[in-house]
Length: 199
Image 1 (spheres, rainbow, N blue to C red):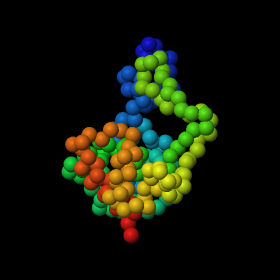
Image 2: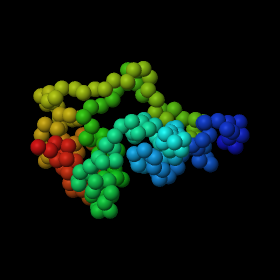
Image 3: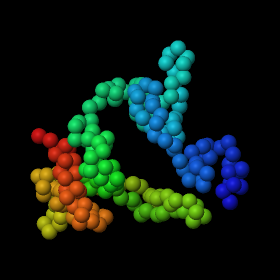
Image 4: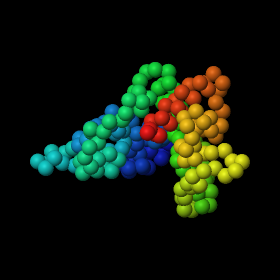
């Protein structure tokens, strides 16, 4: 049982970021890096640095600025379109955030393959599954243009205009797009395409 496991593992790092049911939980995303101001989860805090006067500074290690070694992160401008999609309460922005994985996969420039395949593991069929790989991970880029008779995907879609690229991305989606959401998907895909393929 989880209670027995908790008692056995008490004090170990394995228990640090778990909820009452044993699932990994990083906490709320409300902790700031003391060097660059990046926001992250409490469970992502790696080390404590200091400011040179012996005062400890919370940070995320290499997840943001490497304890202040990388400059310019605070001053980075996201761009109006992406800023709006990530922060606005409008319909397209809410849809983008709710379907971030679909947009991320559809806008990818390459895909990931595994030498000996993927496997899903479960702990006593009680905790959420974990995807594991067998063998070497390979990034598959593919040719820059689609072969005759094949639909453009990944980086190939970037060589088309926003309308055509959006049509290909929607056809290549691994999820079924409900008809009532098609116009929203089109609008967001076009906005992302124009942002990434700006003249």
